[in-house]
Image (cartoon, rainbow, N blue to C red; front, side):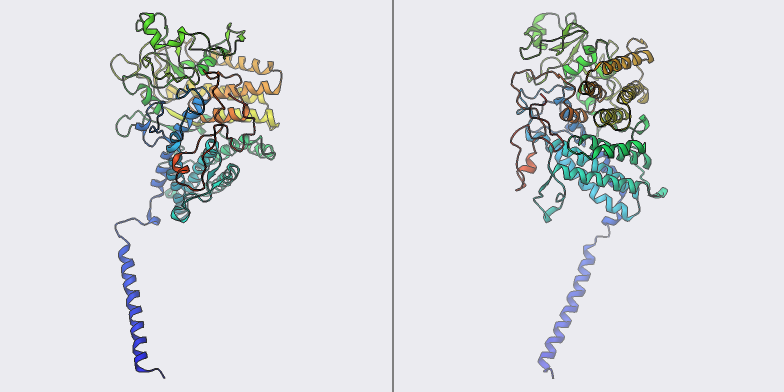
Amino acid sequence: MMRPKKLFILALFICVQCSCKKFNDNYNELLNNPSAASPDAASADLYLNNLELSMSVNDPNLVTGKFYSGNDVVGNITGVSDFGGQLVRQEALVTGNTYLNAYNPGNFEYIWQTAYTNIFKTANTLIPLAEGKKQYMHAGIAKVLKAYTMITMVDLFGDIPYSEANMGITIPNPKADSGRAVYAAAISILDSAITELALPILPAAAPSNDIYFNGNATNWITLAKTIKLKAYVQTRLVDASVPAKIAQLINDNDLINTANQDFVLAFSSHNQSPDSRHPKYINNYGTDAGAADYIGNYFMFLLDQEKGIVDPRIRYYLYRQCIDVTNDPRLPNQTILQFALPCLFRAYPPNYPPTSNPNIGFTTTPYCLVGTGYWGRDHLNNEGLGPDQLLKTTWGVYPAAGAFDADQNAPVGQGSGREKGANGNGIFPMWLSSFTYFMEAESALTLNTPGDPLTLLTQAVSASFDKVSNFPTAIGYSLPTSDTTMLITVSSKQNYIDKVRSLYQAAGSPDEKLNVIMKEYYLAAWGNGLEPYNNYRRTGKPENMQPALGPSPGFFIRSFFYPPSYVDFNKYATQKPGTNVKVFWDNNPDNFIQ
């Protein structure tokens, strides 16, 4: 029999327990703020909006030119494009005279942070939220964008945290997964996205603010399959299984192959906070200070002279502020010209190849100035900014919505008498139908996948010309000339295609034919520096790129340094020893490219 004292203690304990439970229940109820939205009440549309915008520049005011200091930062996809474009000489790399000092790890901080804190975290939150509400298109889109970013981060950095990333205090020091494993995970996510996007979607459950495809699930499925094609071609050197996978995708006939399926980020002409114009427009037309960027002389040489015919896209791609350097009234004497374009008064670099181009009687490597007024910079020329902002060549109407070059010979800017162009409502070409055809041509030539390489090359060039020639009308910009000698016409397009076809047919080996394909891809990809950078590391094409201005640039950058936030605060992270650390799909020698 229980004694009265023990019975009292037991009763008191039960009472206290009941009181504590009631207190805890009441306390937990108080913790639930009725004015705050719970996670399951969050808007999938708002999460999707944040995710899609995170693919672009989060703050265009952060784009401060290409003279990156330790504190300069750029946006995610446009920043990726800039670094790639500079390395392959579309834009000029002018921040160092060797590859080792061209960039510092801090330059990649914003790209890394945007990927992990914006894109991955937002996608990881959105996917279960949308699936719980049966908003399958939201979830599918999030998976496609997440997978695209995963692949891009591997392409830039190699091995990266994935399986342990974004775990918060649970795993504060995530270990890196191999690039190969991240690629495999991304392809699995794309397959899941394809399945989810094919599910029936009620009108009320469709996204209301899809800035890429306006809620068209079919286009998102096509994009997902096209990203898989990109990943398979990218890994063709290290994975013997990809030819069959590529063939299956081609035979399914659901890849981006028309302009209305293009994956592009569209900007606007809105210039107030936030400034949503194309970053290249802001950087080069945004003030009366003139153009900040330098275009690569090699890229302009290919367009203007290398084939012996002028590429009709050149006046859409590039705008010359100064057409005739020797007679421009802004350069009245050689003393001024020596400051503005000092390379004109120096000898041809001894490390440049001296071979002659039979088409034009000039060297195969341009130096200093190209043709009539194509004023840029040579590769790894870090002389700093000269008094040339109102003279050098800058971005044109495509894709940055700058100015079409109709021989205006006027400086860019916003003031009276300045060339304003199309006011910045351009696009970032993340993936175009021409890119698909180029990749299919490469695959057909090197892996014997379906299709004729020459036919696919012709389709690729044709698609690029159509994209560029139709672009001014698409953004509501009236060309400042009707002179057909300056425009892309049916005949000028065909003449160019005939030239490319003849070069391909005259190529004596598959490697030479591949060079023709990749050179045309390089030219068609203007505005997207990532894909040419990937192509260059994978194929070594275009061949004979302009060397560095100095004789000893060191190893080409095969992947980027990790940013300080990863290396300094993760005990498992180690900074790369140099610039020749390759991503998993690049098995080419260290000196394969320059």
